[in-house]
Length: 97
Image (cartoon, rainbow, N blue to C red; front, top):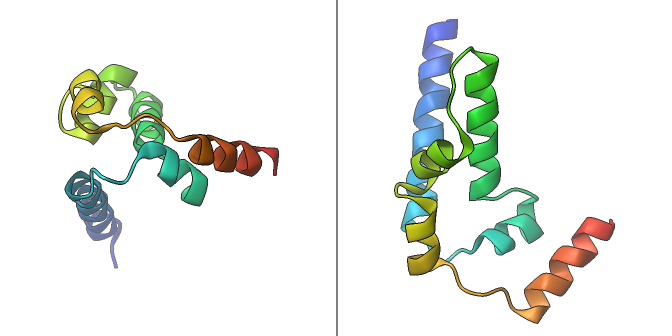
């Protein structure tokens, strides 16, 4: 496989991941952090960092809008629930190792 085709496939997979996350808004970021040690905000940070690595400025808020498909504040008010004590405890346990 040539490099261009690989890049196109990887980009398509990333778009598919974003579409999948968008279709499953019920999956909270804290649940992703507990299970996979990354969340939508991590994707936005990685997006911004990779853009900068390539000489393009994409600030964190712009990157979050690309990941969430809307301004983060709007997504948060519509879809993010307060973390339960159980979720907070699981995340703390994961972070302790």
